[in-house]
Image 1 (tube, rainbow, N blue to C red):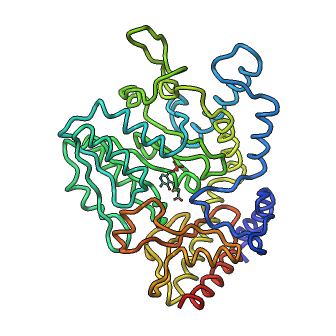
Image 2 (cartoon, protein in one colour):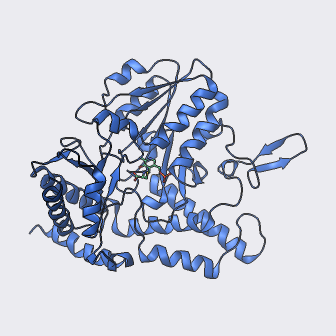
Image 3 (tube, rainbow, N blue to C red):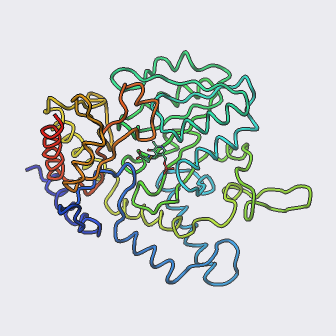
Length: 414
Ligand code: C6P
């Protein structure tokens, strides 16, 4: 056996022991958790950090002179610094705490609204999550700007040649996910960023499905905005972040108005705080904002490269085993995939949820349905898919259990 592989396997047993939920049985079977793209499980270090915060430090931030408030403030700002380092942003003020990817994208869309004119254009792709489609539809409707889509090819990759035809001097923004949540397909964001910048447009990267699996360097990427959710990368729900280049964030209007985002409030007007506070109105989700930093500590303790390599091996093994089954269609079967593989049974009248229910009986958690990506499902001509999505603690033995359960589904539903 390759020594590196042995090392990785040894670490996985230790890593698994750090996730208490893996002790659970589901329908009498040890849990196999392949729904990591929907939300990740939480390691003990994260669970302990939540407990520690409420037991010893709980107070509002940026408001109090007292010790607890000062401690909570320092903890939250330390977490912001960890996120800055995680994505290699130049300045911590370019990292805005949000509730998650959805709120981050809405923040950009609504804050850009005053800059948009009816002749302006926004480009997204056919392979976006609803949260990178609907905010742009709303803002385009309000401003008269036009929404255009990079189409998907039959092999489930983007028809990137079409981007040249779509871009023009009116393009204000191109917004695209780095990895598709529905199919796991990796999109060519470097090409997209280069072409968009040549046309003078800003680029927003939805990193919801890449930040948990792929090292991110916003300076190297040269994206203008990047969004991700904490709960998909070991942190609690209700926290995420938006990165934006300082000079661009300074051009945008505030998203929400309220406490802490102002310098001065008069009866007839207000002036706004400096970055990032201008975009952080009201009491934030302090505990989750702090614990997102702890989740990054967890990732760093293993190393993103090690995580990526392991997940890649699990994914490729799953793809190979699924492709051995004649009754299975794998979407994007030849594409570069990351984190997830999506499939269906090629049997008449079988819905993905039928398969999902059989897998659940065997203790295997997958997501079935449209994955909040209805345009892709329509493009593929299906109602939904079965999606297995991976994380650092998954093993090839778990994939074998998935394949056995898929074979059982074929026998039961065929
Ligand atoms: N995708 C999935 O099962 P929120 O809900 O704000 O944390 O993330 C939204 C979002 C945005 N973009 C992408 C690419 C995503 O995958 C998601 C969330 C989950 O695929 C829940 S629908």
